[in-house]
Length: 317
Image (cartoon, rainbow, N blue to C red; front, top):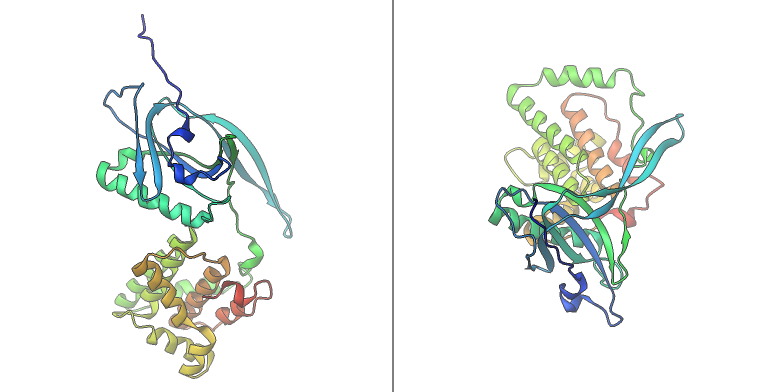
């Protein structure tokens, strides 16, 4: 005869820090849940909870229902993209779960980017202390409103294709780039290949801050060899556009972008990175790459600056 499993109900609002709850008894939380792989028998009637830097965590043996959004690409007619959205109800496997909570949105004044940054600190500490099995499988992330229990989902995000250049309009561009890349001197070729890898990594990032940093690493690799001084990069842009060094400083304002990078890396700030800033940095990279490969400039950085869809004051640091 199977041993009877004892369960208990936990009222989450009684556990979370009281300072998070407003005068009306409400709080909006960003929630991220993980399946914790453990071969050790865990007491299913007990739980642990504590705080890590304004993130509350709950470690419990549980099974939960959650919502999942499927976004599948259907096709396009050259003018309009078509997607299918489907909301699924799923159930986590029974077992040890590690669930993180932190205030986000509502009256908290905490942006999604700030909430995610706090979550990353908490998960990083768990990883350092307990290893990868502590957050073995990410199960879901969602917004939870208490005490109503209402859930808000963050569906998959796709990029508006009109914000980027149309591909394969030039039959020779990729062919020439590939051929010229293969002809580079060995050390230069290795450096360019590394920069291209950073660009590829940036494109797969969902977090805009991480994407920003990886594009910057690509720029450092391709245009600032053996130094973090941006002077070689600015000189290259001046040469590409046929302007003076001072004009390049004024037009492209790369120094301000480097200051933003330094504030993130050295001071730990969590800025909101506009997608057009990523487009702009990618355009600078393309300009530098084409120049290094001896290709005709397409003046992509200037095109990004003059894009009528985005006012510069909305996205430039």
